Amino acid sequence: MATTTTKSVKINNQPIKNEIVEKTSVYKTNQLNLWYGSNHALKNIDLDIKENEVTAIIGPSGCGKSTYIKTLNRMIEIIPTVKTSGEIIYRGRNIFSKDYQVEDLRTKVGMVFQKPNPFPKSIYDNIAYGPRIHGIKNKKILDEIVEKSLRGAAIWDEVKDRLNENAYGLSGGQQQRICIARCLAIEPDVILMDEPTSALDPISTLKVEELVQELKTQYSIIIVTHNMQQAARISDKTAFFLNGEVIEYDDTDKIFSNPSDKRTEDYISGRFG
Amino acid sequence: MKYMDHNVVSSKMKSRLTKNKFFKGLFFAATMFGLIVLAVLLIRIITQGGGYINWDFFMNFASRFPEQAGIKSALIGSIYLMLVVAPVSMFLGVGTAIYLEEYAKQNKMNRFIKVNISNLAGVPSVVFGLLGLTIFVRNFDLGISILAAGFTMSLLILPVIIVASQEAIRAVPRELREASFAMGATKWQTIVRVVLPAAVPGVLTGSILALSRAIGETAPLVVIGIPTILMFTPNHLLDTFTALPMQIFDWTKRPQVAFHDVAAAGIIVLMTLLIIMNSIAVFIRNKYQKRY
Image (cartoon, rainbow over all chains, first blue to last red; front, side, top):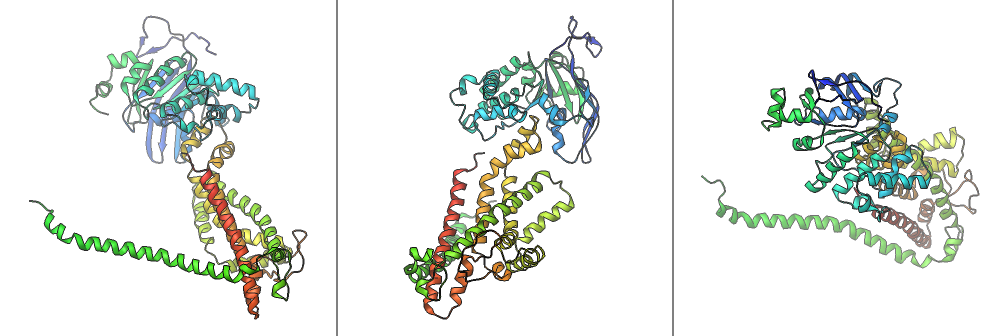
């Protein structure tokens, strides 16, 4: 899927490291504005998100980071008062264009939510949900998808003997990995994660973080996090949001060692937020 | 300076505790009042009508002689009535609830509809009877039939089913819908595969309770003009019929005292039917207890 193109990426007019970066953009956000009623929640967002990388979005509560990630698969439209302007180009097509079917977009862009939200069904039915709604009925194929997805989410060994049990019987951390597996089952291109570890204990958090590292070889991952250490540990690029604006977007190493904006520095050093 | 004087508090403690006890007793008495009246009623009916409950009572038609009177036509009529009311009212009720909760936009029109559905639940059953008489019996020319009575009863209990289903659907966590939408499911797929399975206990409980109201309801049947004495059982849905409450009503009106005992026997049958239906509702609620 990943075709290398010849675009070398420059950020702040400095070449990244000393090698030629050959990564395709998955998402290009151009001048995105978003309003909840009269509340201007996202202001002139420009972001270029690359393939097979982990992009972290950090910022204090209410800065618009969750709003932004939910705009990427248009889940934000569930709220009726939302209005947007600008464009988000996903793989060359504007997701806001009239003929873009939102169901089609969401089949390619999976999402993992803040609170683990498995269905009150068996583990098997949870994972098979996505493939089933997209028309796969063959039991053998479903079996394979379920195993592959659970292995992909590093939870196969823990649940392989209890696939027919209700997913609600699992611990919070396991439930979250079931949700990740459920997302992998639709074989997405991008995985959006909205604070996936904020409801989890430290050990489960660690497992999810390790998982993200493994998944990025196959998927492009965009993760919203409250936890700056987490962003530093797992991401390749970091965007710092404040009051609905992108203050700084750069390599994670650069953001955390040598931020160019004073506000970024204040935030990551814990002076506010 | 301290604001709490513990000596004063202690000295007033006793009257507070007395008050507490008084209200506990008062509310217990309120509970008991209803229960005792119900118990007296039940005992009276059972002693009065128990003797008439036997196989013949179920197999006989109405009769001039109390010993030979039976409820065959009424019982079968009531069952036929339920066969119309259950599918019609549940389809319309659950459908309306799904539309209002899942599809309808939050605008003035829909808020107005929602408020008025609750109001509709308070309309007296006689009024529904008149509506049924005008529309189904006369305008649609269904005659005094099971179908006409069934549609009327369905209208009567529709608001109850709608409100119960709406509440059950609303209780399904938003997160589950989001999980489904985020995987590219359409609204319909989400409703069928996620929302409805989770809402089923609430929907069924509400519907069964509403149906048990319909089976005991008399006024609309009287207004429509359902006969009380029928010497045959209906063959199809456009046949005329009679129902349990009508039969009981008729027996109670008769001057012979023996018929009052027959009425009591009829009440026992009707109440048993209601208890069975309510038990099913309780069973379903407990079995599919929400797990989120």
